[in-house]
Image 1 (cartoon, rainbow, N blue to C red):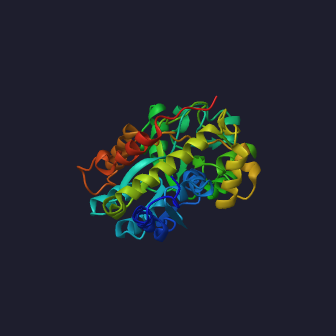
Image 2 (cartoon, rainbow, N blue to C red):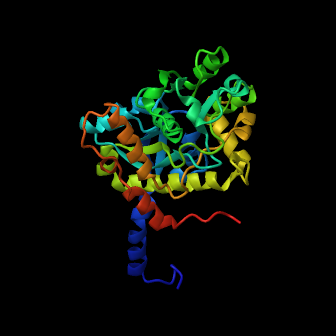
Image 3 (cartoon, helix red, strand yellow):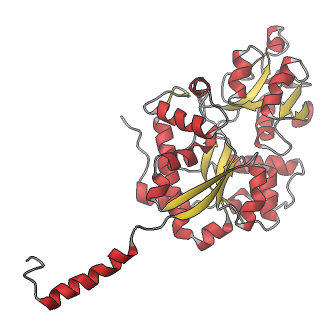
Length: 348
């Protein structure tokens, strides 16, 4: 029946029922403040913004760059940041021990065979002279890591263990990844744990070689997504929607991987997003360098987190001797996202 043929009372009822919808207008997006380290592993955040996944979830992202994840701990603790992402270092655990109730909620970057975007390299001259042949030859060398209590130190420790050595068998210095390139060039260090794009640069320039032909620390949880306590507690529904958008984005990334590179279907679109958002403006670097791994379902490697935490504790870098990695992890947001999205299926 048309509206014209309806009795006046019925037409009035319909009009009144529609009035709230007409008055409401479009749903207003909520701002979510995200801290990033401006690295390739932030691609999940960048893609979710570029492809409209955040907008579909009713989220207006405000992305703020930081020099490191360590700088995000305090603003996550105060709620100035809702979410963030970066490496899991001793400082993060110590922040939780001090009462900063942030949580690790999803994978953001990890190591697997074929996708070792962060690894130990040794000066090529040492290999050419026969002074370095295997991980057992690390003894007595001067090697660099990003910082004390960083994941790169734990990766270096795994290399030493595979060579039958201890952390005390080497001399460790700390410096940024770009500085390692110069330090190896002038023989100030014998090698170091570096990541992309510095990794590709030292290999291409013939300055260094990989310390091992196989992944030294497969499964290492090198980067994670973090949520603030306020975001989890006060805006739980929005935090779950955020995770859905993020998982959709990292699935797009996984579908574009091929043979250890960003070289599969859709890779060029993803490279463009990375060029737009990160300091690396040369797209060829992203095409050439080793890609990082990230679980397409966002799942974390808790065993690797436990291993790193144990290493940090052995070195006296953890203030709470009883703190366990599980206490800093909340899997519920990924689990809720998977209920909505189902498990990842790689496109044929």
